Image (tube, rainbow, N blue to C red; front, side, top):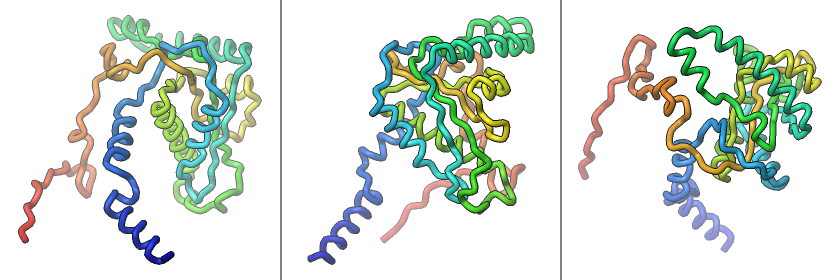
Length: 243
């Protein structure tokens, strides 16, 4: 009886794409397609503790080099800290704007690049390179994979948040040294992302930077190569199988 149960479950898993229905698979692609870097439209209501921990659990389940799990999460609720981070953004943003000229500078000035004062929840994601977990596996040749592992955790959180109707914005225009000071992050711990998180009134159909004309999405074909970097990928026509 027990054997038959497992055989049945194995058969079901194969038939359903290793346990996922077509609807499940469609939902995954849909949430990837509809994920947005949210900078405005945050609602003032706080994120429920249960939901926040659910999103953090999704982040914690991300793949990591050597099973090291180097991501650490600083949940920020203090209003004074949030305002201080916003001031850091303003200073960094002024410097960034000076790099552009003419119409591009005018366009830059009209972009909303953060929701630091509107989002009810901030989250700083850091990479603890000091952790002995993983015993160095996979890090000897490409040590950057430690930080890449943290980025995987952030993407997990971002996609899970979109599935829950929660907006996430990645604020990259901020002084890392100032964040280290404000959040008391040790020098040897790397700050990877500062995120604004919250309920939103809607999600845009297209990314903001595309909608406002800063940049357009590149076609997949322009990014594909075959075997070597100077060899374009050539699509092979589907073959028809014959019984």
